[in-house]
Image 1 (cartoon, rainbow, N blue to C red):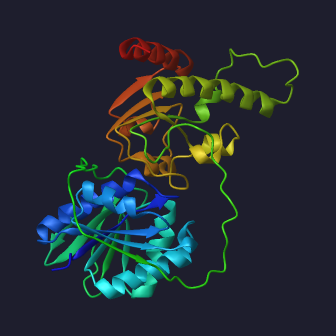
Image 2: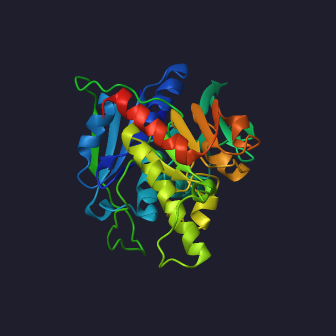
Length: 347
């Protein structure tokens, strides 16, 4: 009997993103409640090995559809192939990780299949043979439960790091349905890729050290005499503050994050922004330095397992969410933490 649950394996140029295995874990969890295995769906060019990797992570079977035109991710082509497989196999549920690619893909497949899609789920359960997804709304202040009862397949996208990753077992084997794909024409062309600055990915990081507007509040630092503009002096001080944050992140093997205020002020690139208009993260440890705790920022990190806040203002809203709070100057506290962690970790 064919599996009732499919999971989509997201990848970039043939390298699976870690969130795909978290989505597989979520699919396996609901599969146990529905007495079904999980079939992994892999689309691309020369990616059969990802099917074997998915089976090692717990999938009972895999479907692979390949074509040279699928080497680069183009949502219209991938949606065409995924929708074709779903129409042929007729699973009841499709689970995807939430990534930049799958946000487009999931929506387009939902339109093709005339069904609903629930994004950013942090918990899944089965009620009356339907998957009920829990996801945050209103900037994370409330949780809602959503279900698609009248359309199939149900399409659910799970938030990164909301579920653990299964331990792979390379001895596991399963059937792989591999065939050539025949996607339609595409109006777009991928010309190339530009790598972002090096460092740990925010969405995958288990530890994040973030800075806010407060990183520039060190009047004891004297900018070079050639910097006379007040705004440029502020940015120069902020760069010194973020250098302290990068040093702490380096010792912890962490990613560097930032609030929108810090990004808007020109202290750090947008790629580092955490929040409602940036990246939504859920690390094991989130250290907020000089971040007051605006609701937009809290929406992007409130599901972190442990939050540590460092701020000079004892009334800063971030302290209401933090597990541990330190009232003080980050220019004194962050270097002290860095040195303490360096000694403890032997770095």
